[in-house]
Length: 88
Image (cartoon, rainbow, N blue to C red; front, side, top):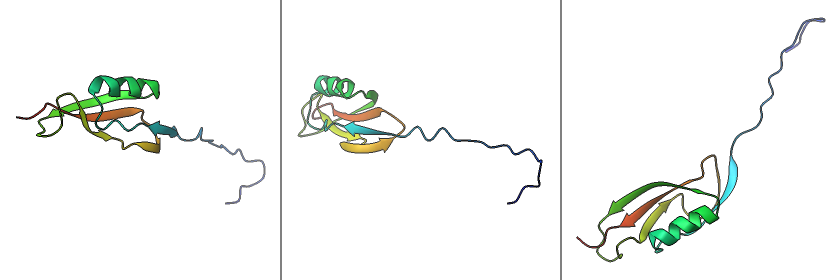
């Protein structure tokens, strides 16, 4: 749009997004202690840990994680884990 001469113009400039590229390690089939160390080594934050019974995955071993392993663009460094309580 055109602005008339001698008018004040206010401009808002974005600082950009807080999205950063993160490398997420593969934590599946790792013991919880090892997974926790890896999370810290990668500069990430341990998020929510959910426990569930599993017939073939030993107790305190990671079954799944979010986000999935690999390089991702995110504004959160949290890694959530699903950990086995062992069989019923």
